[in-house]
Image 1 (cartoon, helix red, strand yellow):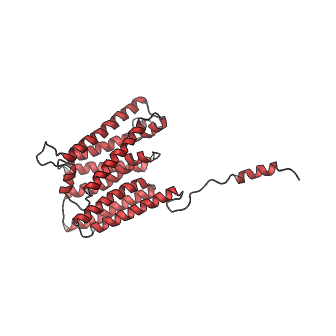
Image 2 (cartoon, one colour):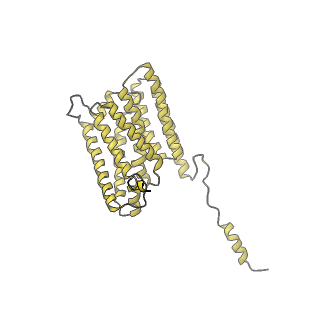
Image 3 (cartoon, rainbow, N blue to C red):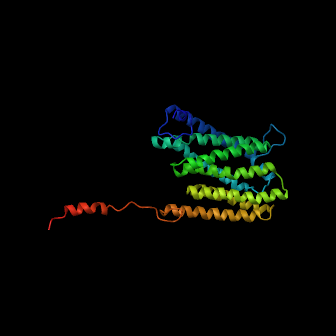
Length: 292
């Protein structure tokens, strides 16, 4: 039990006021850094090196078999950052149960922002392999959180867990391919294989976790992947695979949503309902009946 006292990722029933204050300050600070540096490096290149580029121009310069349409990526991040404002509403709420639930994922939120910030600072300066290391670390962190954290409100789960997890899953392939930046026949075959690895990880995450929010996040990103691959058509089959993956992920997600909101399991069987109280009341009714 003792080590858990110092583990910020441990789920707790309540948090000390000093801990909440720390979480609130660091969460706001890390979010602000992402917004400030994200906006700055979206329109300006770094001036401390001669060949730096903006975030999105860097993506345009290094088109890969995993490139996602830049406009779709920008929309994704705008929606994500707006959704994360709801997390702060919960973290600063006057309701103790809501605050406690939000505080339980504060460390996850902060660390994810640190990984994103490190990736941005390295990416715009052409340090592609170090950036890929932080992308992988971000994926591992988000992957663990995705399978470990439950009980959040839908919008907080989307903004803190599901959407960041979906982004890091796509980014490790996208950023990694940009770092390798090779177009040999072997690399093209590898790209045709790894796009299905991306699909399998995503599809299993949606199905096994019964999580349509990560499904919609992956569907939007896979749509951007399909659009970009169709536009460039650098690999003969990649754009076809991308459209198929988008369609399957979207259909799977809609299926999960339909199952959840119709009270069915992922196998579309009705969830067990509590037995009727009539059977329990029957002996009492018989006892209270007048004797003949």
